[in-house]
Amino acid sequence: MNTTGAAVREPSLLLEPAVHARGTVTLPGSKSISNRALLLAALAEGETELEGLLDSDDTRVMRDALRTLGLDLRQENPGRVSLAGAAEWPRKQAELFLGNAGTAFRPLTAALAVMGGDYHLSGVPRMHERPIGDLVQALRGLGCEIAYAGQEGYPPLRIGLGPLDAQRPVRVRGSVSSQFLTALLMAAPIAARRSGHDVVIELDGPLISKPYILITLNLMERFGVRVGREGWERFVIPADARYRAPGHYRIEGDASSASYFLGLGAIAGGPVRIEGVGGDSIQGDVAFAEVVEAMGAQVEREAGALVVRGHAVADGERLRAFDRDFNLIPDAAMTAAVLALYADGPCRLRNIASWRVKETDRIAAMHAELARLGARVESDADSLTVHPLQAADWRAAEIRTYDDHRMAMCFSLAAFGPVPVTILDPGCVSKTYPDYFADFRRLLAAG
Figure 1 (cartoon, rainbow, N blue to C red):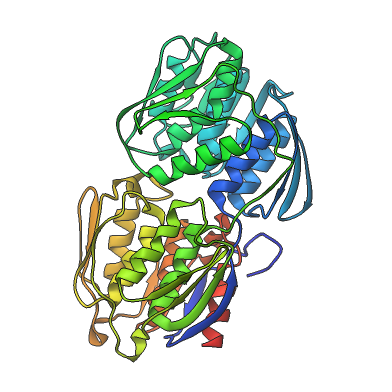
Figure 2: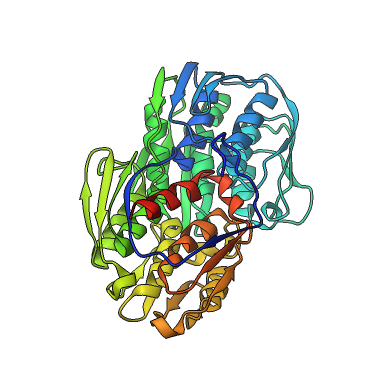
């Protein structure tokens, strides 16, 4: 891997059987926080300096889109950006290509729809398979003008200028993706200003991935907007809500990426010190520390770091099996599915239906690739059960990654079996963590 921000798309990466790992890793900035902070800075009155910004495919997509829309965005170095925001963006007509970045596509859809203009939003083919109908329906409830440019319910989208109507509550489903509610919440102050009314958002049915909504609310408050919340059913954004630049905002490390190193410490002895995210994190995925603790690892929590010590599974140690609901931390849950290979019994991951509509169908992909290693796997609409592997059961395998960064990173932990593992298209990690495999191999070399 290079260190300039763009990962080299090597065809494959061979990982020989590993035994121990130890050392310190500094996480890249959180993708969830980085793209939210970029959008809020673009909407805020005044100038914001963002420090610790993730430099990856997804954040480049957001930065490029904001520049295309006429925002004054200056990048001092890969992790530091200054952005002069505005309640109304200069360019009212634009064609935006947003790759496979859900954290850019969904919030930009909402922001542009409530501003109004002439916009066309598209992405890679997989993005055009990821549903967006619940968000579009909610925005139409506000009076926004949105049309599907392809299949009903999916991108690409065409956005026009519609007369906003915020006098009635807008309802949105939260059972497919929490990003729909996040998008509405972040766009709501614009709608409130344009309409002169409070914007009331009501949930229609259950909400998944609640910790990601807490990130959204935390950041909105940091940028000057406090959202009234009645449980998880009703959110009120006052008519006088206005985003204001905080001046300087430092982005913490990515807690989803921390899961791979928490898993590494759990199976490789450690200690592995993970800097950039700790016990004071605003990200829900920091709770993955509790998962590895339940499996037998020890985790120390500092303000800005985690230190994990665990078993050396290559020496015959086993992790404790689990049967766990992962609705709150679906991204980090993928790491648990690979750790299950080293458990002392079958492991069941429940309430993970959202995996089906991510960068790939992650339930199907995880089932297929774990089986490729020799594991017995069972799956259904919203769960996955993984039976552990004994030494004689492991098969050397080429792991397909489906252009999904998290498939590549979590399957790096399969290197602690007794056979070589080849990761195909390892460069797909450029979506969120371009230097992941360089950091991973450095910790193995120090073990």
